[in-house]
Image 1: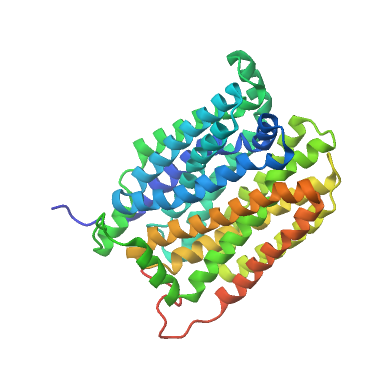
Image 2 (image 1 turned 60 degrees about the horizontal axis):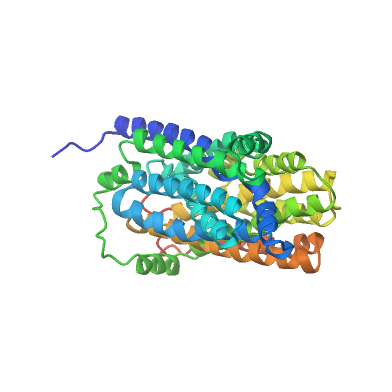
Length: 426
């Protein structure tokens, strides 16, 4: 029988957890984002169809959605460390399969590899929640946003390694567009090692020990806990809607941007820079966003995120093919709006989820987020093929409106007798 952790122990474990997650996010993000600038181009090259260009990224988003829930269940049963390591390793296998798909010119294999690659995205998303397991509610958004910020290191570097990846591809004798996936697999393996070695003790298991909450049994029903939590807390439902709307709007426009630029003759390296600017907007300012969410409130920050998304989509709708200031500004603001909405809504989800159902709710939220984004990404190729990129950007504004409405609902005061009106098991 071991003694329960003291307050000093908890603070030490939390600092170690944040440091480990920051390191894993930094190297893991290289593996996740390095293929963003080339995924749609590789899919078009293999399939010979622009209408199918967005399918690789769509399958990656779909894989991330499904694996979000699978990894959440693993975390619920075995802890954060086991779930995160599983996610990164599975993603590494997917990246290798994408390389093989390019070599043998197989679209089905590329899509299967992309789906497995989404597991690393799910792991990176799960890491942001792991940062909140032992964080006090007054600093919860900052803890979450610090881990989100760490993605900047690898995420900005990843797309800019497209030039190096071409050299690597030449050296390995594989198609140039598969080089980013080869380098990406190494980053994901590194993230798995960082988490597996250093995420000890497990923050989720420690939080449960402090709360006297036993580990859920394998046969327990997770969806029932999710449904009851959402029914009891309208703010939780709104947060999930805001998270899904922001992510779907971002994915729909982002995945088709490389193709829109290629139509105007933009070089691969310039496309990589635009994606880097977009990713910079997504992650670089997240500590500031987290600070605002802790001080001004989650709902106001979510509302601002929706407005930024609307403005960014208007700018993107005015962008001509090729390279332009509109595409740089629009993609940067698209990432920034996503950052505001994601940090705020993710923290709201944690705030309003009871501890016994927290991982289940988080996994379900990311599942819904991913499925919505996968549908948006799949339709994006059809819209661009039939009506063009500007129409896609304008139509995606409807998703940004969902974010604004979710912020209004989430910011409404809850009845005094409603569970989770301010916090639940914080």
